Each structure stands twice: as C-alpha cells, then as structure tokens.
Length: 115
Image (cartoon, rainbow, N blue to C red):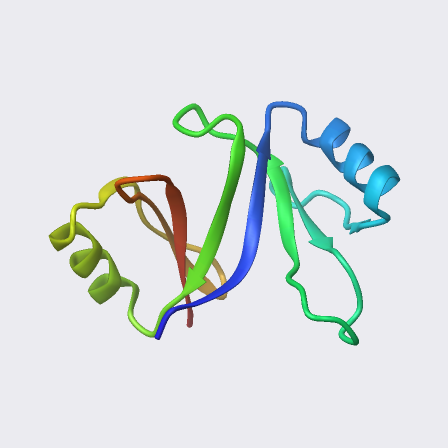
C-alpha cells in the first residue's frame, strides 16, 4: 500500500515562502540543498507530516503536492498510467531514493521509492 509520507510546496521564491511558513506556523526550515529546503512541521508527539519547500519547475511552478512512498516506483508508474495518470517527470535518481511526478485526473502527486 502506498503511504503519504511528505509534501512539497513549490514557489518561485522559496526563500520568501520559507520565511512565511516559519513565521506564521513556527515550522523549522533547513538550509537549502539543491534549492530545496526540508521542513519540520512539529514533533513526534502529535500526528502530522514533514515536507519541503523548493523552487517550482516550469511544469509545476506553484502549488503543493503530496509524496507517496511505494515499494516499486516502476510498478506504481505503470499502474498509474494504466489508470489514467499523466507522467510529468519520469523517474529521477537521487542518492537515497527515486522520485517521479505524475498527474491524476484531479491533481498532482509524487512517487518516491527508497533505495
């Protein structure tokens, strides 16, 4: 079963967005890494999820998307396409995980698979 494990806030001014969310909600924002800032929204004592703020790419300059962790990103992409999803970004490889962005019939989401 795929589980929502995080969120991404896209902005064309991620520094300004980070300052806003830190000031308004008290979120802890890490220093940028590849123009992406990890976000901690609270402690483990309450349910919730952490995420990140990044500079939105041309294909998704603003908005929020969830990240769904899967066991096999290739299988999840194939299954999503069979069910009407459109691939926005093919599978990308990072040091510790793979990531892809898709659009379902009503919105966008990211798939992530840990290595």
